[in-house]
Image (cartoon, rainbow, N blue to C red):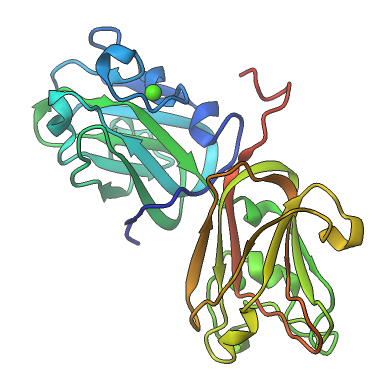
Length: 306
Ligand SMILES: [Ca+2]
Ligand SMILES: [Ca+2]
């Protein structure tokens, strides 16, 4: 499994914007008030004098660790480097994700960040790694570790509940297949949905709570008829009226290549408990091999305090 860098935002869960914000941070040592919490304070401000970056002492193998409080399936770790002259200190840093605290969590499965330019925010994505802890460590040398923000996201659709207008011949292509965590795009692999031939067929996932959604990834069928997704409209909102189709349209699929996964990223505020994909028209089939929803739980009175 390898992290690939993408430019778009990703994934989620928890209390204020994402997993990291509800976690608990610690690090190898603290220098100049660069406390561990500064990397999960919800602020990417990348100048040291803005008071939102961590700073260890000149430790050998300096590390910072985030305790997510339980094991999550992590899909994205976004790291913001410091903008000052010391940005090169992060060179060679590794992300480690797993459940072990052995060697302070630095022995968990490893991913290299290689180089994050000064002041830049970089998104490291993977298909989903289980971890209670997320570490950033600089191995093999004495160094100061600076990080200005670490964000951790998961695919919230995986914990949702899916439904659709009808199954193909009333028995094939279950709605759940689009949130089974598997992008396999061959219909026979039983991981894609398939409606019957209908007018305006739709598929919907109930996230069971309202989320602020940063992106949605959609995987098209690979073994047949990729054009069937052309023109699919995506609605997000809290209403189930008209099967959720009264909610605002937040995007439309122009086309997705056969077997490919495309990302719809949102810069505007997109919030809702339900994500609905509908294919307007008559005599249509709607097939989705995976729908991933990344975001974070919409803040409420309860989860604002932690
Ligand atoms: Ca920060
Ligand atoms: Ca699937």
